[in-house]
Image (tube, rainbow, N blue to C red; front, side, top):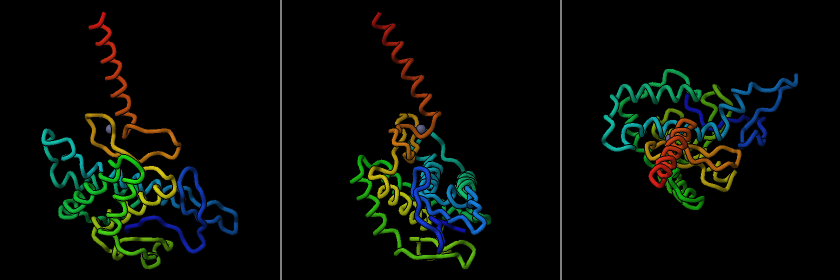
Length: 232
Ligand SMILES: [Zn+2]
């Protein structure tokens, strides 16, 4: 099942944490909805993070140049399916080698949004992708299997690449709308080609992961020490 940002008929727009989420109202017993199902899995931020994870999974072999051997097609399929499962998509996923090829092309387009220097540039790139690659807004409940929610792909069984572009453009566009800043960026580590989604805290972010941040901090200390040694 390919879901995007889900809400339902009784859902209310609510600020949840640091992102705009579609949160189901508590039921009559006052029970709060399961966090995973309603506020975490389907939040705009989570959808945008899925986009970043897929861009990174699909770009792993090409973004850093020819030094890294390209992983086998089956490996890439497994990685992409693992990301989709991590973000709540249900089996059978049936991602094919052809799907991966098309999704790679979409990942390259989405990377340009993450690479945008400022909000205006990110918005302009998203507008181009929305106009060229996404359909009109439509509502779907996947035949009753989910609450009603919005899709920008052509139909519920659209190819993975079409779904990837449409769901990503929607999440990233809402983040720009909500925050009035670029939705993310490129990892500042010269040895990393990952993209990341900016968190909601307002703290500027430069690296895709704590791993990259730590590695670059250690390298920075080493360079500073070498300069001191040379200069002394
Ligand atoms: Zn990184």
